[in-house]
Length: 72
Image (cartoon, rainbow, N blue to C red; front, top):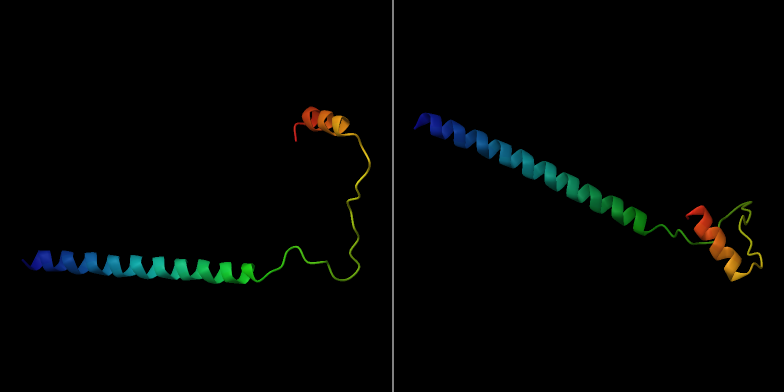
């Protein structure tokens, strides 16, 4: 009977530690998610930002052949 009580106590300790670590991980992920949700990734950049992409007039067929040739 005494051995059963020690086993039950050990199982309870492991369960409490596992539950605590799981809750810590869960709420840590929620905090990180809230932090990144507040970021506006598509805002205009500040400072001396340079636009690196300009649309060039290319034919659609030519763009498709480049797409299929490069495998992108």
